[in-house]
Image (cartoon, rainbow, N blue to C red; front, top):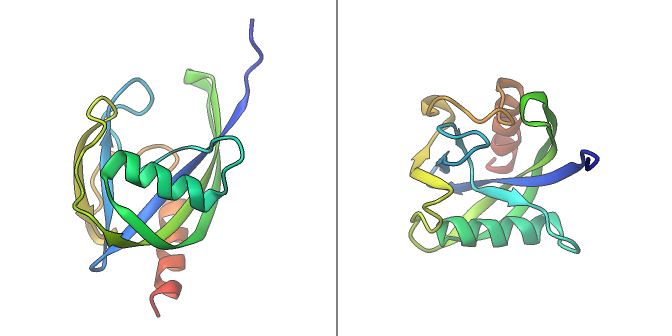
Amino acid sequence: MNEPIVQVGVGIFVLKDDKFLMQQRKGAHGAGTWSTPGGKLEFGESFEETAQRETKEETDLTITNIELAGVANNFFPKDTKHYVTIWMVSDYESGTARITEPEKCSAQAWHTFDDLPTPLFLTLDEQMVAHVKRRMEKLTK
């Protein structure tokens, strides 16, 4: 039996016109829940590089001004998964959001913290949402 491992994920809040992009997840882990674009950190990548790559792969958007927004440590006993999620915030630079990985995402929409879709993905709990909201407010002042 393989030993369980901890994986590092990067979630990206892409800001555009006071909103950020959310995606409805598809697949076994978190199917039907909403989160931001994101994915696993690859060997040798910085958090910023992962944010750029995953955003482009999942949405076809180009982002800029990428900064750390928060960190979450989540254990999913039912799925035997343990993730450290690095939350990043970025500005939209160019492109039109579209679903580029239909096997992983069933919907995309721009939201504010006042109109979050439900249910949210487990790593995006109320505490992390509040933290990211405060961080984003500081960045936009």
